[in-house]
Structure formats: C-alpha cells, structure tokens
Length: 85
Ligand SMILES: [Zn+2]
Ligand SMILES: [Zn+2]
Image 1: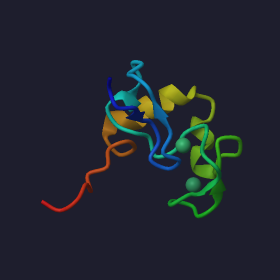
Image 2: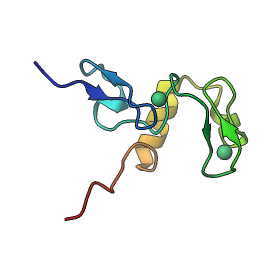
Image 3: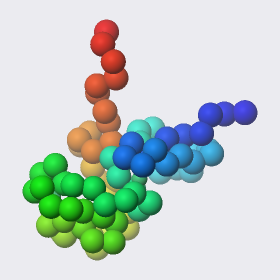
C-alpha cells in the first residue's frame, strides 16, 4: 500500500494515489480546500473563493491549469528547501 500523496503544502491535504495532475510530483502551495492565507506578494488575504489581486488574471483558468502553469516554470510547486545537506 502506497503512502498518501501530499497535494497541498498549506493545508497538508493528501490524495490516495496519483491522478495525472502536477501534484503527483510536487505539492501545491495552496489548494481549493485551504483556509484563507496571506499572499506573500501583495500582503492581502487570499482564498480559493476570494483570490488576491495577484491571482485575478489566473482566476478564469481551472485550478489544474493554474498549477500546471506554475509548475512549468518551477516556481509554484517545487520546494527546494528540504533540510540541510
Ligand atoms: Zn490546501
Ligand atoms: Zn497577492
């Protein structure tokens, strides 16, 4: 039996198995299940239902597409800080 896959680093959501989305490889910073969080970029509160100004132009895209968009340039889903070497 496989370990659950971490989907979201913010709320620690998991999924039981890979489903072909970018979170198969890397957990997202936030997901639709997250409680509101403060945006690192603009400092405003942000949630799945009420996105901060940074997200406005992305909000028309399905969540999976947004994740794929950010995963493509490696700035959204990949956390390089995993302990000391
Ligand atoms: Zn989440
Ligand atoms: Zn923002």
